[in-house]
Image 1: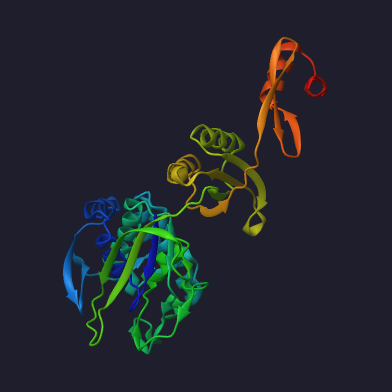
Image 2: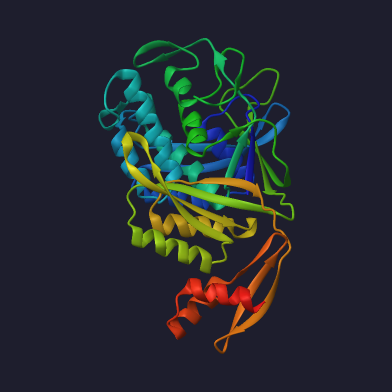
Length: 371
């Protein structure tokens, strides 16, 4: 599924969560994911509220512990317990930008305003809602930046806050009115899911959700809009899944390729790569029909332990082909004919080579001569 976001008045973690719940995500699934973190002393509810001329879903979080400061590493560890890569990636992104801004390693970052229950609940909740809706692609209209100032533990800072701007690197933004329109939590979630910015992609619209923010605006509803739809696939449309891996053995990589092909992938292959810091790695690619993409994505995550992958839509051009069979040494060998040539099927030649002891290259020449 695809989600297209319209940050009408902005985007915060609770607004995004409200919009996803309004679009059909299960509140129970969200609660179960938050509970899996080990967080205690919280209650999460969603209610329909009136905001301007619209009704929307507002997330209500009640906590027994009002502490707002925690080590970022603690929150990341708690998010990792959920099995939700998006949640872990979003919190890691916050730790990285906060560390860069304050000159400390990400592992030593101590979150102040972002260290409370709300941050973990919003991020884990949104990741769980996206999984429940089986969302694989997130698109968004340009984000309003807001303006003015905000009071923080570090004093008065400009809006957007420095952490928000760092998290929005690469995003498409636009001017906005005074006030905090995009929060660090919202920006971290958009980064974690690899959001694409621009017009809505072509899709079959299935549901629309409105997530309400806490501010009351005098002239408009305060909402984030989430539109949920299915990709519109042409006859030749295929999905390519790819992920960079530097900690997976060759045996596991070969196993994943075999499993992907057995599960219906049109093709699967591995290419060598050099990642950041000069680390040697491999890129796993899986080509599949759109209807199998979610299943194969889950397979790749489960087998490799990867925390993320890329999904791309490609158009597969398939030329016409037909088969002809030739008889060699008492066995059938299929010959594949295309518009620009002919070749024997490898599996047939390999089986014949095993049976006869003849070199495969010699058998290939015999197959061509037998046409």
